[in-house]
Length: 202
Image 1 (cartoon, rainbow, N blue to C red):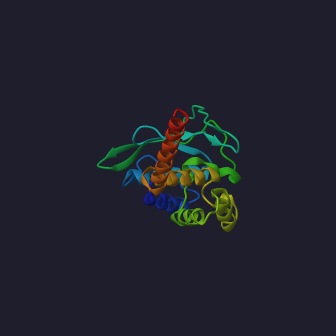
Image 2: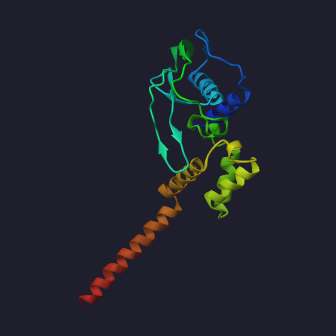
């Protein structure tokens, strides 16, 4: 999933505006890494395959599939890849192989491809507000999926939602009031335990 808010919105924009007949070619130039990577991700999702990064400027196909009850990554040695020459942050396509040695992801499962999944800023705010109101992450996800007309239109899966909420929860617990409260209760418990032992041995 895209990491920053800017990258998330940029990828969504590129995926929305991708032409159906777009094809990469040697000599194409992109102004920066985000533009180059997102263009290839949008192209890949449209075709039905995932993308992972190799070393800088080198993106290869990824056949990892996320199923309902298991998460397995399978490398099949697919030759498809794109390679860029990077000069002053300008990405120039110098190598491109479009042939794949595996079947593409079916249309009704393309929304599961990891590199294309993202939680929009709006959904993040709604999720956060619903959880603060005492609504569980699963119920919040189901609500958003229903509003979007189905989970395939949402742009992310339940696991992404749970991971996002867990990350936020951990941030709060690390240095917030909750951690201080837990530390306070722990210190009280230790004092009570010490007092009980001292009473037994009087």
